[in-house]
Length: 67
Length: 348
Image 1 (cartoon, chains in turn orange, green):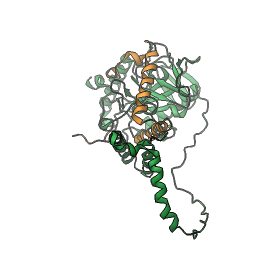
Image 2 (tube, rainbow over the protein chains, first blue to last red):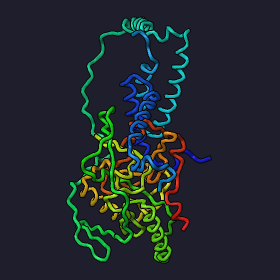
Image 3 (cartoon, one colour):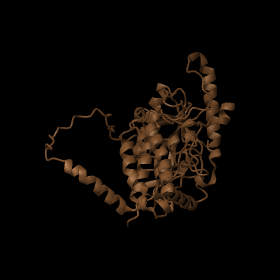
Image 4 (tube, rainbow over the protein chains, first blue to last red):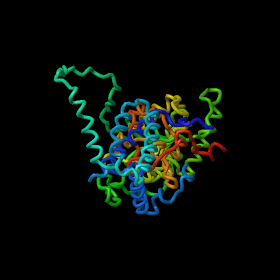
């Protein structure tokens, strides 16, 4: 079994922790759970992604096609 | 409103406990586990027989009753606390960026550009792609739509690793090192994969011209103070180092010559396009997989990129836009997963 926390280093986790803090703070302000906030934010992402033109590679490539 | 949400009561306690945890991994694990437990508590308390536990008046009355014996025991013997001057903390030294000096092209001879800060760029692998065109979202106006900025200059830099086959950097291995480097450059030129590649000897090669998009970031997001960017192929420039991502906190596999060239190249690009330091990040920080809403589809430079040596602050501390603006998440695979980047090249 692969040891977790292997590929990413501790420096990278600091950004993840600060993101979590921001997320929880926003959820607290809006009096909703973090899970509910995530659902809202994902809808936001889907809405914005749908607005991107086809010429933008983001909407025309799958992750597997990354270099 | 007499209805009490368990989350309102538990969140301040969780925040207080989490703020005392120094180790980021321990903190992440704690937050993840408490999220799950709070969810379980909410499920149990939502049952009808526990209506009284959700009643704010019940808890206020209980608190009042408990305060009576405490107050009766209290004597006015409390002494005013002496004001203790705060001792200087020995935290990390803040990053102080030197002002960005103008960098200009000195001359071009035999396919090599010489720049005023000492940077040399080889252009024999340069190719065109589609012109840069990107849209941004004003994160401070969540209901707003996408906007196209009038100027089409790049907004940031993404640092990559080629994840191609490496050879030991020794004089006896010169022929093999050159062969690997040449095959890598041919491959990334064909794929229009990056704007710049820095080979093992620190030589800088322009691949896709700066005015065009490169196929470097795939599904990706980032944000600065005002704008959020979705799909960085167009909005961000790509600098790729001929190397592989070292696991965890291991020292990066990068030569001094590569670091030196990377610093000069970063400086030149930032000076020319006015790129903010906070928009110079690694592929691991921006890569996402929208099919399962997980971050870190690619994990190159996931933890040991030498930001400081590139003349940048430690941008690993910056929050990830994918997590806090777009609701992406992560699991154990984010920390244990590595994906090769230029598989085709390594097979050549």
